[in-house]
Length: 623
Image 1 (tube, rainbow, N blue to C red):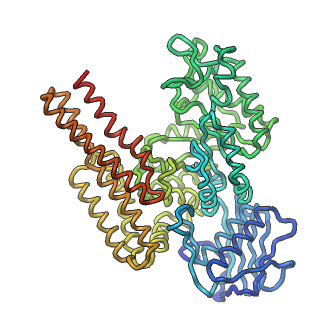
Image 2: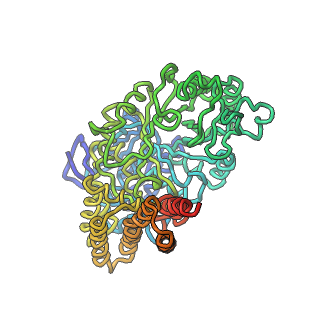
């Protein structure tokens, strides 16, 4: 075993000799190479020049002092091999994407790190500055233990953002091979047009990335405005009548027992994948939170059996219409929460298992993981089974993004040892990309390098490289403490406003570590700025941590029949507290890019935890 820049790798041969990259070295790429190999060459040249000022020219033929990029079969999923001698460097990939990953491996050995998407201009990529570029000679290879590594990218979550370009670039550097897009049904065509206009599709092609989506899109493939007047029977039956596809909350999904509706749905999907060949994994789902049809025919079966039957028909038809497209569904979630009783998935159907709202103190590999039976039952039905992990879902996880060390390690162990084909990591909403980047990064890196690159070692490498040699050691300790399973629930409770006084004191102690680190990095503007982001998120968490008590006190007082004038005073104080929380979120969100989305904090977190329950209590007081 050898250790290079904190990365433990299996080497076939090791030499004490070193290679120094100078301007006499050249890069060779075959004239027949594709766009991704040529992009890999450009990335290597760009970062070597950024590091040292040395520009590596092209080589017309292989020869001494040549870095050769090319393909070689038999290296495994997205695999690559690197051979470094005093005369040549050879990077070979199982596929073009593997060549690109090999280049990023080499650049990491020269000190580059890609911890965050390059969105915030005040927070640049970690690219060292040094005149001498030295590499140890040797040979090694890597390949993905998990075939599909999908990033549910917040820049494609319900809105296509220009910042997606930086996110997808970061995703490729962190060994993801697919991006997941979640649509708003009425914007599907507009989204894809924007992806093309913004250069997102071209950027994906350069990196060899696949596209997964469009997510909760059933109303796009069977739209109300096109079909409802002529075929109301195609649409979900509830409350004594057929409902528009979607409609008022709670929305209703279309009638899955109607053969004509199912056939038209499939015809529309066929037209879609033909029109948009960028989609490689078709993920079309019912309305999120939508109810199943309650017609007499649908009630003879189960929502699971009806939906699996339709997915089977769709997968069978797309084998001819779009043989390169994989059709998946999402079991363990929504209408597919319970396993089927009569209709089972065909061999052509894939799955992304989703356990919404899981507490990350537990991993899939834990013996007492509460949904293990459900997970393993669903997995037994599929040849291509993937798992979605909500490592950055700020609707239900702590928005401060503590490192989920136990979950990431255990999840990956389970997936590798149980033959899971894919890992999908969800990040949402957009405004929290900075806080969650370590967990999302590990969702791509760890399944690729498992077990040689573990989360705890990666976390220490991150703290030292990102926050600098002075503040890094202290912040490495900070992250290990706050991400330890014994402490993780403290941040969950604080995010819900449920902390007691002792836990608030504990959080303030953690903030003290951050502020001491800021003092240590005071002479480094970039590192100091990065630490200020960390401090802002912790500051917001501390403000939220004990605040729900005011609401629960009011709810109890209303239930106990307290005096109206006392309750009105408490409600006024609570509304002042809510206004202060919103103001604080707006101030911190405006100050730090990617730490929090102040509109989301107000519209989801604060409304859900404070405003809505307070309104309900006040309504009971004044019916």
